[in-house]
Image 1 (cartoon, each protein chain N blue to C red):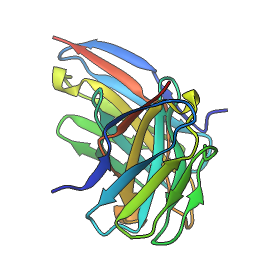
Image 2: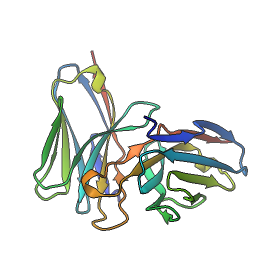
Image 3: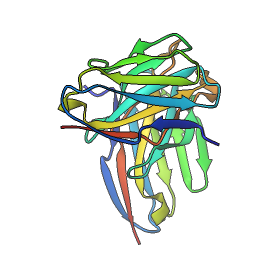
Length: 113
Length: 114
C-alpha cells in the first residue's frame, strides 16, 4: 500500500475558485514538505511543516499539518492560471538519521481562465 | 546561482548500453539523492548519500549504481540499460538537518531506453 496518499489525483477549477489538496501518511510525520512542479521542469519548494497544528502561508497558498501529524492540506485561495501545475507532498518518516523524503504521486491542478 | 545541475538533460540509449548521469551541487550540502519519476508512480528514491564517500539504497535501487567521491558530485550509473529504466531522473540535495532540510532539485534528466 502507498505510504503517502494524495487526493485528488487531478483537479480542474475555474479561475478565482478556492481549492484544497490533501496528503495523508500511513506513518508518523516528522516533517511534511509541499512542492510544485510545472510540466517538464524540476520541483520547486513551497513550504515545510514540522509541528502538529502548524500552519504556513505564502501568498495565496496555505498549508496545515494536523494535530496527529499524519495529514496535511494545501489550500489555494482565489486560484489563478499561474497556480497550475502538479503539487507533490514529501514526507520525512524517518525520525532519525539518514534524512530522506518519500513523495506522493502528485495532484495535477488545471486552472481555467 | 547554479544550485543543483544535472547532465545530460536528455539521452537515448539502446538496451544493454551503459551510461552515467552526473549531479553537481554548489550549496555545500551533505545529503544528495537520486529519484526517478514515472507517470502514475510519482517520485521514487533510487539511492542517496549522507556524505562524501557514502551511499545507501532507496526504494528502487536495482539496476543502478552510485558514487559520491566528492562532496559536490553524485553520480548515477546504469551498467546495462533496460527499457524499464526509461524515466525522468531527478537529483536533489539537502543540508540533512530537519529545521532547514528541504530538498533542492535539479531540472531532471530524461532517459529513453530503446
